[in-house]
Length: 166
Image 1 (cartoon, rainbow, N blue to C red):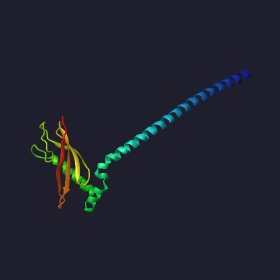
Image 2: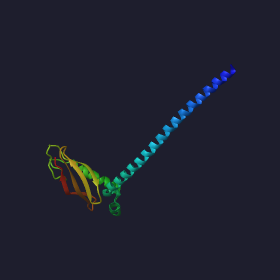
Image 3: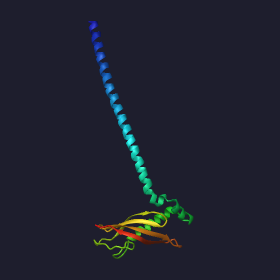
Image 4: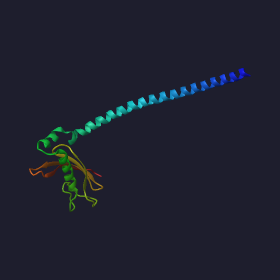
């Protein structure tokens, strides 16, 4: 009787160990697959990051924030460049508050009866700004030349404009 109990316990122990071994092997194989998949995704994401960095570098080429010469131009004249850029942007956006039918900078009339407004701007360097405008239906772009006179007042002049067709 004792022998049979020990035999049954032995068989039960062997079955339990076999079950644990198979279960552990499945878990180990599954974790290896996840690690391999993670490594593939990591390589793919690193490639994507490199592409995005290249895009950022090419887009920042025409931006005041990455243009040392333009930054130094205003710095050498004694301006606080960050405040000046805020003033330039605010001055350009304040042109949207006009009376009458015609925008002071946009050389096109609205076809919808809505006011034409400047939506977004990008300061390219110490002389040029690119801006886009719309009246809700038509839209276009402006190349604006800006300057500061001796009193520190901003002057805007449209160098080129483009109205996109419908």
